[in-house]
Image 1 (cartoon, rainbow, N blue to C red):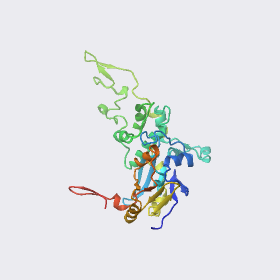
Image 2 (cartoon, one colour):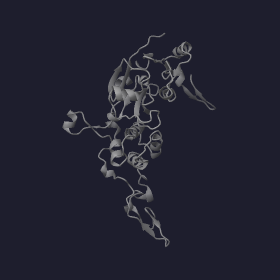
Image 3 (tube, one colour):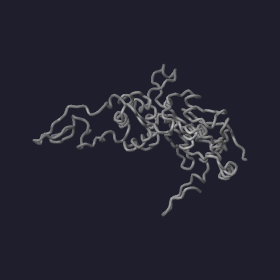
Image 4 (cartoon, rainbow, N blue to C red):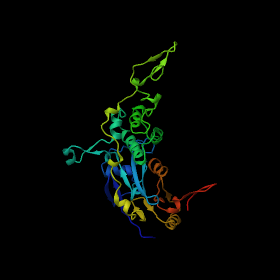
Length: 331
């Protein structure tokens, strides 16, 4: 067997974490809440359905030389799967304090996403809020050249559920951080479609026509908040940087990881030969990538899987090739 390492190394909110006693059955959510005491990330359904546990995971893609950001369910993500990655939780975002006293106490102001959800009345009980914040935050970090569209926001929220607030205030708060805005100021070529002051003669914008063809205006507010309420602006230049150590060195990427727990052993081979050898030695071992099946079987069905294998660092299993008449997976 190739020389292996048994120490987990990853980053959480910019701080390096070195763990020698991790149990492979631990999830990232368990580790954040119980080991690091970062309780902003919530335990909801525990099966990847509600999104209350959403965090951002970042990695450096050495093929494209870009930093990739992903919103993941921490309740399903194995702690062993974050070796060599950077994790950002709801506690790790926000702007440095402007007040001198705040700097000394290392306090942070709300991030633009957090502020807009709060001031747009997008949080009631607040249990789902960290998940929505991190899904929107990840979407902003992933769009390098422009703000996301509302269609992208709605798609990004597919894994987030809210049981009490309702989605309108959540979406309206996040809309202010999209390139769509509202109508984008394109209604009738002048101003916003939701602004009653921009109604021109004969146009039915915020009203309806009566039987005589006259426009009846309704003096009602069509928004839950006003852009002037927001103090925090969004700028990618103000975001925490990706850990330089992970970008400059591929040492952690190349490590053959073996984490032996009390009842489960986690293998992360980095070569195809290592993977084949493991499957030959442990034919009933579970291969784990997204962990959407194995995690639920272990948690709710109490299935025992003494050997788990993660193939995510093997080049041959990641290759995708597009030809004129086919899409080829694997090398």
